[in-house]
Image 1 (cartoon, one colour):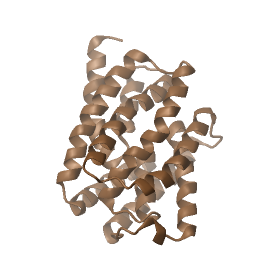
Image 2: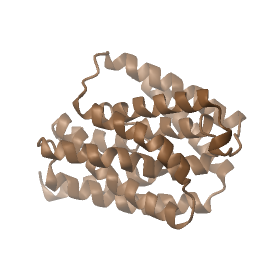
Image 3: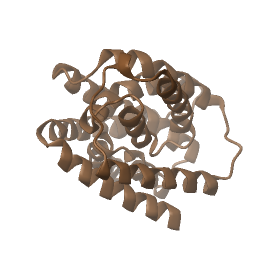
Image 4: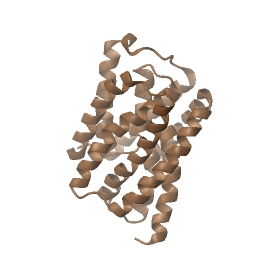
Length: 247
């Protein structure tokens, strides 16, 4: 791969890191770029996972420093997500990819409308019904598998799980999602490295770009009012979902 191609990957990944931290789905941009440059799909997915830890670590550090992370939520949700990612390293989903895209797109559209018409109030974890917690853990586990096998939009769906099943407001869901995904993806990425799927040279611009993008995105989240972020988020993911359905 030529030096200019690594530069292109870095620049795309900076935007993907900023976009992905706020809305999720940054991997759509990076993976599309890697595929167009001829990178083997398995290597692209695995190396992108390692690169994404730069975004998650940076976002987690900034939000922890600003006291935006709820440790009880992390301790509850992160283990389920981690279990899913570890299984996702070895699992090949036996379902048609087109069906998966349509299911996920439909779910995204549904939740996007919810973010426009409903603004859930933050609730203490102890006040959340056990049925919602169990469903939330199941979905977090599934999203962990999904994050490793299909990659893109898993973070977006996790935002909805944190909002509607664990009682977080939109901005708090964004801020807490980073550490949950980091805890799940980092060990899985290390496993992929040991199996020879990580390209070290490719990982450098992917990791550096995610760090830069996450720094910009995290500060934008901290400075922007939640209702504006929520409206932009809803419009963006509805457009993304419609586009996915039409592919």
